[in-house]
Image (cartoon, rainbow, N blue to C red; front, side, top):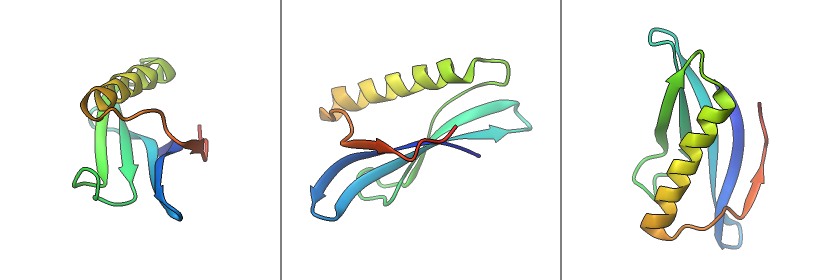
Length: 93
């Protein structure tokens, strides 16, 4: 597992934030990378962890992650008018 970064999507009250961690996970039997989103709690969507997309071992991982993230964030904006995150931190690979 490779940690990429964390986004705090909002602060709904003092000390109550909505952070999400993004990771790449290697699936050796499938020779695929999976981009995941992990929330602190299932309050927003009913689950803590989501597989956002996958790509092959020979793909440019930075470009593949960018494409998956842009598609997911556009979907979130169109469905829930979710704007940009409040803070971004904990940068990984």
